[in-house]
Amino acid sequence: MKSATNYIVKKSFVSLFLILGLVCSIVGQKSFASKDVVRRYRVEDVPNVQLQNATRYLSAHKSFIAEAHRVAIDSIAAAIRDTLDVEVSLVVLPNFDNSKYSSARDFANQLFNTWGIGNKETNRGLLILLILEEDDREIVFETGYGLEGILTDAICKRIQTQIMLPYLTEAKYGEALEEGLKAVQKLLVDPNNKEVFRNSDEEYLLPVFIFLTLLGVVLITFRHFRRRREVNSGKNAFQRRINYEPFDRDALAAYFFFFPHVIIPYLLFVIIPWRISLRRGLICESCQSRGKMKRDKGLKVISSEPTTEKYIFIRTERYTFTCKKCGYQHFEDITYRILQYPERVIDWGDSSSSDSSSSSDSSWSSSSDSGSWGGGSSGGGGASTKF
Picture (tube, rainbow, N blue to C red):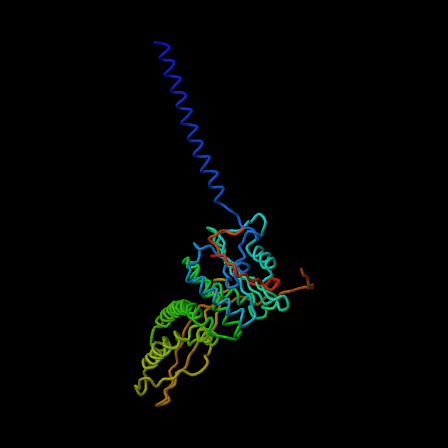
């Protein structure tokens, strides 16, 4: 009986060890498999499809770019090379070896010079690199010396952000490369082509216009109700007219500059009717005419006396209104509490200043009709945008 029990225990231990061994084997296989999947690309790993097929300019795995977009992109790049003597290469990668390259721009620069994109004499080459690593996606333009005058860093950045980015953020990578390449082609044909960014500018300006409109409405509404409160604090129609102050010229100029579409209707339909209403509220005490009393320019200080409070003065000002019909004058005296600090003489002392400065996978492409790049080199120009 004891031997049978020992046999069962030994068998159980053997079974347990077999199960643990199987689990470890599976985990180990998955671990090794995952290590095999994560491949960090270096310059020498990128398939140079132009060397395999002279009609190919896009190096991208089939899973990244649809065939229809690939054909369109290659066609545009071929037209640019044939008609404008500019070599364009487009590369799409899942990642790059960031232990060897400091950035995507560094990778693009080394790839550009390794392949020699652009004619050796003119250096009119362009590399468009799209990195699709999760949480670190980036589009990079690298230009040759001969294109830096046309495809400036600022222009490259605008193409990326205004034309390509809307597609890139929606994972429409084929559309992004195709539309970006079309923009490049138009600018190479005519560097002053304003149509390239027209649609994107309109899309950009619309939210700006809406924002400025809302901001203008808020600022003007706030100012209007504050002025209303000040005007209505007057005890009679004459004091309300005195409390009404027109726009300061500088403020009005600022409103016209930033919010012309808001300030003009406000002046026409709010301010002017309000001023007319305040004027019509003034009645001549002699001829009873309404709206004929006009405020004279300036004012007269009747008195200014200090109070027991420090820096507080009581000042009485007199305003004069003259009837345009009968010449009668109305005098309106208003008393104000004025905060008035004594004049101070500041000794600045001596001052001085000084200036200071301070290998190819089959799912890429292949063909027996090979081509080549022209041996150009990068000028270090271009731009990059993360998305």
